[in-house]
Image 1 (tube, helix red, strand yellow):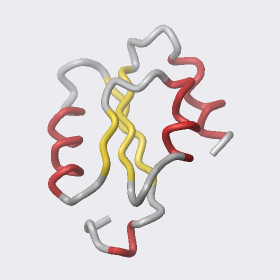
Image 2 (cartoon, rainbow, N blue to C red):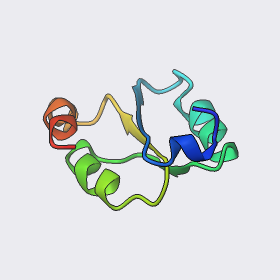
Image 3 (cartoon, helix red, strand yellow):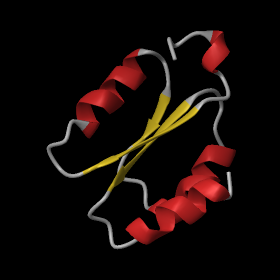
Length: 77
């Protein structure tokens, strides 16, 4: 994942608690030219991934009340 054309179909899901470095990691992906969606409810992961143009980084807070929806959402990708 170098920000090259080889990454065009890539989807990265960042999760973690507040203060875990999600924001720093998300900014790094933005600097590499990726589309970043922050504070995404897990139930919207498939929709966000399906509507992407190029590589995308999806950021979800694990304290969300929808945390149990993350794995089923990933299975729908």
